[in-house]
Amino acid sequence: AQKITQTQPGMFVQEKEAVTLDCTYDTSDPSYGLFWYKQPSSGEMIFLIYQGSYDQQNATEGRYSLNFQKARKSANLVISASQLGDSAMYFCAMREVTNAGKSTFGDGTTLTVKP
Amino acid sequence: DAGVIQSPRHEVTEMGQEVTLRCKPISGHDYLFWYRQTMMRGLELLIYFNNNVPIDDSGMPEDRFSAKMPNASFSTLKIQPSEPRDSAVYFCASSSGTTSYEQYFGPGTRLTVT
Image (cartoon, rainbow over all chains, first blue to last red; front, top):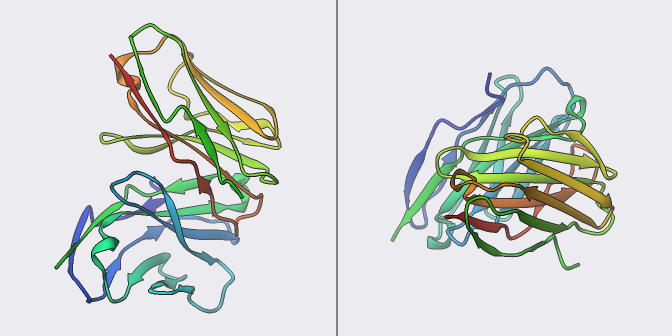
C-alpha cells in the first residue's frame, strides 16, 4: 500500500491566487514528520515546510502553509498569492520513527502558474 | 555550510562501463540517502545509511548497484556494469536523525548510459 498519496498529477492556478496541493498518508506510527519539497525545472529539490505529528498548530512558512488534518491523515500544502516562480513539481514526504528515519515520497504534483 | 555536494554533475558513459557517483553530506548529519529519479518511476529510494552503516538497501535494483560510506563525510554509489536503463538523475541527501528534520538534497548527477 502506498504510504503517501498525491492524487493530483497536475494543477493549474492563476497568478496571485491561492492553490491547495493534496497529500494523504498512511501510518500506524504515532510519531512522524510530514514534509513538502519543491522541484523546479532546474532539477534541485528544495525543502519548503515541515509538520510534526504532535504539533497542535498548522505549520506556516511565508506563503506556504500546511493544512494538517490528523484524523483524516491529510497534509495539504497551501500556496497563497501564487507567483510564476512557483511553477514546479511538488512532493509530499513522511518520516516515521519506526522506520529508522527513512523518508517516503509521493509521486508529486506538477503545478503550473498562469500569468 | 556548503550543502550536500555531488560529483560529477553529469556523466555520459557507454553500456558495460563502471560508473561511480560521489557524495559529501552536510557535516554533522548522521543519515545519508541515495535516490534515483526517472520520468517513468519517479523518485525512488535506493539505499540509506545511518552513522555510516547501511540500514535499508531494499531499493537497490540489482547486484550491479553497490553503495559504500567509508566515513561520515563521503559516500559512493557504483554501477558495474552500467546499462541504458540506468540512465536517470541520482540524488544524494543527508539529514539529522529524528523525524523532525528535513533532508537536504544535493544537486544530483545526471547519468546517461548509451
